[in-house]
Amino acid sequence: MTGQVRGVQLARLLGHWHALPGRRRSPDYAALAGTVRGLLADGRLPLGVRLPAERELAEALRISRTTVTAAYRQLRETGHLASRRGAGSWTMLPGNHRVASTGLWTPLDDREMLDLGVAALAAPPQLLTAARAAVEDLPRYLGGAGYHPTGIIELREAVADAYAARGLPTSADQIMVTSGTQHALDLVLRLALAPGGSVLVESPTYPNALAALAGRRARITTHGLAADGWEPDLLLGSLRQTRPKLAYLIPEFQNPTGHLMPAALRERVVAAAHAVGTDLVIDESFVDLPLDGTELPPPVGVYDRHSRVISIGGMSKPYWGGLRIGWVRASAPQVQRLAAVRVGVDMASPVLDQLVAVHLLADADAIVAERRVQLAVQRDALLGALAQRLPDWRVTVPRGGVTLWAELDGPVSSALARAAEEVGVRLAPGPRFGLDGTMERFLRLPFTLPAADLVEAVGRIAAVRYDLDRTGRQRWREPAVIA
Ligand SMILES: Cc1ncc(COP(=O)(O)O)c(C=O)c1O
Image (cartoon, rainbow, N blue to C red):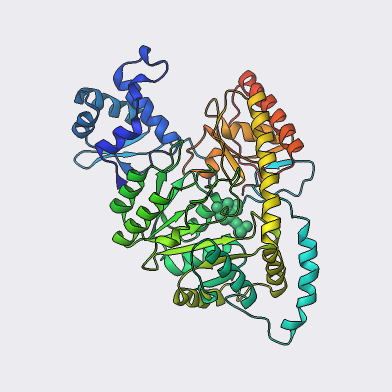
């Protein structure tokens, strides 16, 4: 059991449950149960939480207790609720409804496949120039042993300067260079989370973060994102109720939904985390990629007075994933402790790669500006193709980042991914981003491939989507690549 939803909170999540389409044909209790099932399947209502007592929910919804009793009974019958007399009722999903959200998910080497499973761009043309310049710089480092557990000073300074430019004064000794953001997360978890510790994450969230958390055997609580992003009262309520050791959040162009957390909520989250003793791990992977001139709120760290916020980020999204350069921004003593942890993992990052990063960051304004233009064009091509070929899908136009989160016309995401693979399109189905098989009505679509490839991919997806209806839904078979 990871927490409890109060009557008023559930009432807010249920929204206009009594006025849903097709509603006239079903009795109140069935409509209520159906809406709860939908919230569970979409990850908005977490699994394993205690629902309010029947009387409390009836009061919050202003309906009779008999209706709630009947709805809870139906939810038990369909495997969505487990009850114990005197102890309450907990949410669950029926046992046959599972797709692993963790496991290997890497780009394919198969060049024929249109890979929409991975949300990352090909390298910018400036990468080769930066690599050549880095080789020229290398002799300066060759006289030493080459181990720099927190990173070479030039890169730490460049990263610290970039934080300062965003309004968060930072010194080089607050930066530790890592082999990508994923490595940064792993090191932070090793430092800040004992095995089995409790963690709050967004739902949906980045699957490889879930993999890192699984590696620590973390106990996970979720905050279900709504169609327009975080629900402040529910998020703060979850923090206060579950008091997790750590919360992992992606405030800028959240992967996969693309949401941007407003400044006011950033401030409130930091205050609430401090009040309950939660450390915040803030993943800023997409912070360089606002589109359409979208203004960024201040970094979450701006509101931190008590070293509660550990920020992680890296070069993979604006520059190139193959560089494997990321970082942690924390207090100087935390960075020293991270360096000590790292000695037992990989000692240090390669010097040459760090020098390449220094050169890329020196040219950041030009490179990132080009990336934004490229991403906006590709996003618009993807949106156009979706509107034309799959008009029943609902998408919110992301104001940054590299992904959009499509709401499908049915719970077919895994079946669609399976079928798409047969026609040369690789997809990461919704359940990859949820827990325990939630998110079947959603699909993440990155706009990191060239526009023509995106249009071609949507055409093929549309074809198999309509085939699915004709041939009946295929059951998800675990493809070898997920492992
Ligand atoms: C939110 C988030 N965090 C971390 C990563 C991993 O980044 P890196 O390649 O820097 O390890 C990604 C990559 O998709 C991501 O989307």
